[in-house]
Image 1 (tube, rainbow, N blue to C red):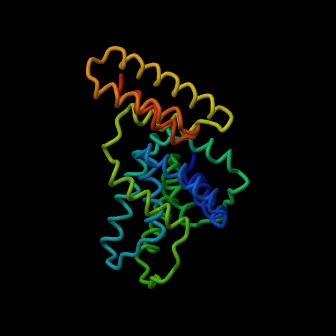
Image 2: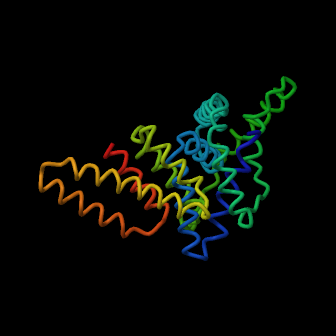
Length: 247
């Protein structure tokens, strides 16, 4: 991944350009937020790019420290983005008609500082970092009445996901979420049917082994509920999670 701004702006524009179509927007938001839930590094890059663009700090010393610390963190962790790249590529490719990339001077500066490794870029990077510090130190008042846009919404949720799910997802849960995100509409039905069949077989096995009437009754009830589920990504996650608990 040579930069991050293209990916970030693509995700932002997917939400922006589907906002008027509520069902499609809701689906896109679910996919993007699910990806952020899956990937800590995506949440962090997404949030820090937003903050470098929007944060205002009046104290010039603090603003310089903030930019230096943020840039250092992003540079030190940029290689971790490779793990999420296949998922991001698929999300964007499936919604490429919604992706519009515009010129964002702040994101461009961040990209150049983080991803340019050539020794000849040192002087330019110092200049770019200085401009970022000046941008954050700008005392221009930001309107508090600005409407909440999909871009703002994704930013807020990315921060909330970071707080809520920082260390709560197990490796198995991450793998389930990753597989679901990558799942295409074409194989959704077959994947759901497969996981439902495997789970029902496991429940039948537990019922045959159970010597407790109450447990058997609950297992039968669970099996009947599973049979009635529609083949959706939510169903896949729920049933796959149940199967992991049963094993």
